[in-house]
Length: 202
Image (cartoon, rainbow, N blue to C red; front, side):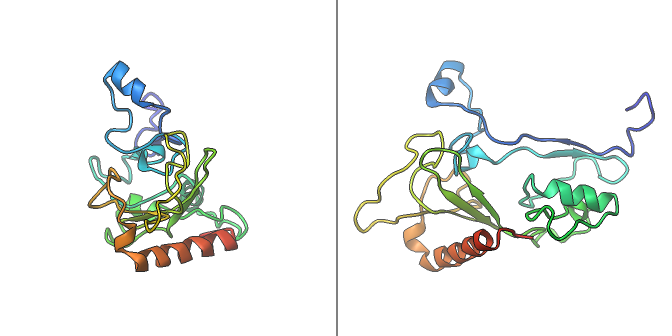
């Protein structure tokens, strides 16, 4: 890009589609935590399965070293590219895509979400649904839902049947606080159901 003079006005994005397949034995063998302290791995509902680095370089429009705490999703790329190109997406296209251009340009308020909550289905035998809304995350069952063991658990009598985490205070998902926040569970379950039934979040 430098040789052709395209560096300044070329958007470059570096990221990954999911977390690693990295078992406890791998951590011990290689003395390396591939998910940097987050719980779980690829296919899991836990953060290690899908919280990825997202690095963007565009010298013409992005100040070097700037940081955003917005929660975003890979699905947002198509709406972002369309917005950059000045193209309106058809209503039936990219049903879960929100343009990140206002975040890239630094015009979107930092304390206002750029997109609707993220809903995801895990990839393991004990498949679960997860919704992330702001700092809150609900998983509609117990266990990872993916490759980490246990993938699924039966709830103990009188104990929560779902997982609720506040990722601001507990990003490693060490403490299920479902029993303490029944109203938050109802709110997130309703939001998840609405997105699942409508087939879209945009």
